Image (tube, rainbow, N blue to C red; front, side, top):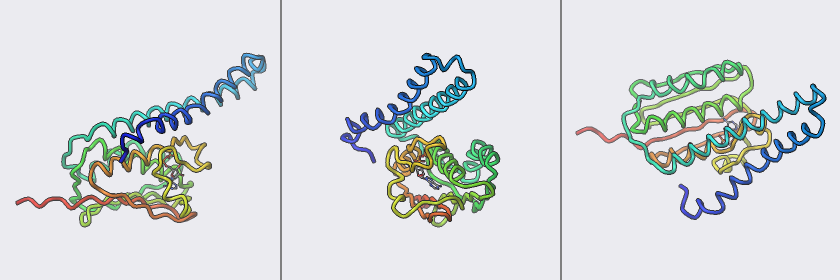
Length: 228
Ligand code: ADP
């Protein structure tokens, strides 16, 4: 979990660094337009499209930064979260993306799986893991969501591009993303947020991945206390 030291200058420096590149790109595009490129409609359109992409990146970044701060500043209220209901809700967001990319979603949910968790934060975990699985899998691939009772688990697996062994330890770092994903609307904050939420719940997250074969993210919650 983040400590006070980490929240200081390093954190500000990292965020500034992330903001600098898209801002510099937008400035360059606008200046080029003002200096004459505006007179050539085809060029102007291309440049505005690029600027629009950079602005979208900035929007993602700011929204991820806000979630990151929110998760760090409060532990939401816990309630009984039914796995089937939570997955169905998350799929309302993720399914259109899967359909657009030609990816099949497979559900393997045991009956009666219930997490003691903050429902909103479970949504954040599921949506982040699902969006990544969909983003890093090519058309025709599969994304499987599993929920198990004993041990109490929540799992998202894909048969996509996978990761190399050296990459796996880095993916939970703030702003980490491999170059190839830069064009896929990445901010590198998603998994940092997921890990924080998992830790807040006293759970653990494990990653199994092989380059070219796919990835599996498994969250294991502490066993529920038995009612007496
Ligand atoms: P983002 O998705 O915004 O880049 P994340 O923190 O969610 O940020 O992920 C960090 C990096 O981890 C990704 O850029 C990607 O390189 C890698 N990654 C995450 N999930 C997967 C996955 N399911 N398959 C392959 N690589 C992944």
